[in-house]
Length: 406
Image 1 (cartoon, rainbow, N blue to C red):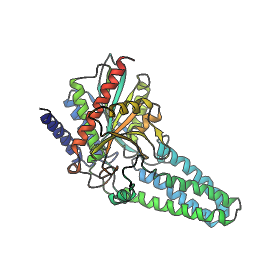
Image 2: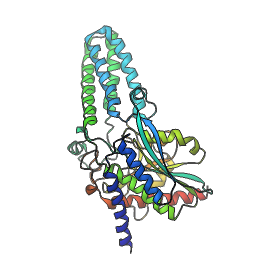
Image 3: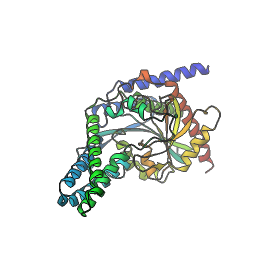
Image 4: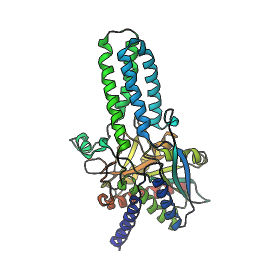
């Protein structure tokens, strides 16, 4: 009987993944809206009142980041050409560094807010509970990423540690950020009249690195959109699976919100919009965020922190809850790791809310078919998605038990 139920569960998960992958859904596009309407219709089939919430955001992160690094490269060239230009170059590159920091940490968007915004779409379904002690937000994103040469699977294989899966991935975006800072520092040295020995080499290297980064970002913008099966139709399928379960058997002490976010691939645009609209209400209701990301890689895991530049450790409550479940029988495969990129859990984490991302990795410790045209339903490990749902379900059970006694 259990095998039959497992088979039916996997079929439902795979059907949802295939339905989403049939839609080309880049961030803030007609496809993202179609995907949002599809998710809303699935929730309504289960009996939820699901709302599609529109917001505005610039989806072209490759353009925003590309302007940062290419402008820094030009500032560096100006500094190399003329000591008189070195002072203004230092000022410009320092402002670019601050703006880049804000974009990469989701704290503010100085430059991106000057670029054209498009309509993005979140979906929110609620399971009301007048007796709830706290609110659980179960989330995933339904938009799909652009591919690009920088995401080539061969590069991932080359970068991975030879000693086995890494506990923490390298913070790759620290390199272009450091290159912008180097333009600032070297230009100040140049403006101060120091000999070329102190500034010429670093400045040339920074200009080169910023230029290469700009070219790679431009390539992302012109590359096709991935089908997004693992990233992140698998996560949306998991949200829908839990929605179906909790509709039948609601957690007695929790009010559960089911969020399918848009514009995550634009760097958390949908979750930022959700926060602007709903964080004030949630702030007094002890929220807990359970986020799903790339569940079909094979080995279920959870994150304990993330961040492109600065590492933001997750709230202690969230990490300890996941660790306790991972120590239980049946979840021996589940491990924790830290990513130096970003997921939708970053936004509530920065606000101080308990949040955690459940994900998966391949045997090598990397994400299967990450941002690549081969990220198709045929390459999904559906049993991995199902095990992630089971792990999350157990987390919710413990969270509910603890809410009862709080």
